[in-house]
Image 1 (cartoon, rainbow, N blue to C red):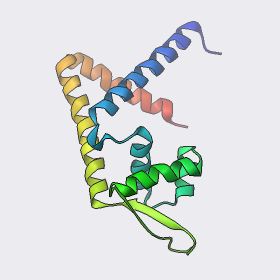
Image 2: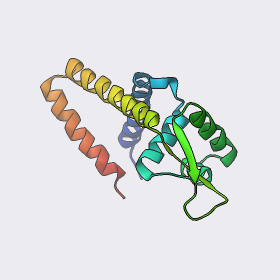
Image 3: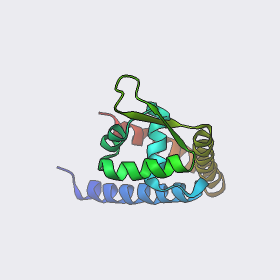
Image 4: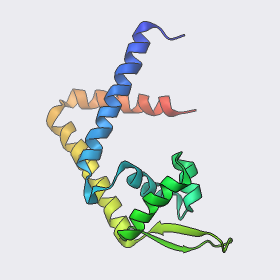
Length: 143
């Protein structure tokens, strides 16, 4: 059972990580993608072409919602459809060159914002502490 100090730390850490994520999203406003759109294209980038059903399951949303998300991305030339390799009734979506460009630019903007913030706001000792904390956060994520 966690003690009060651990509960306070968990609350503080959760709030801080949420605030960091908001700052990173704001820094990467490339193309004004919604968080759901960014997540879908990022998932396709890492996992390869996917159906709407597979994306919906992975993102924990309804297929109808994912259909709207994918439709908007396809309309903007970020995703392209092609026939499913084994099931002729389905289509898969993959990133276009424009989609890759937008995703890379968003990632660069996030990384740049964070690197500048670290360099400008933290002393070398604080930067080392942050590096240690990042390792501890990775350890928390291990199963």
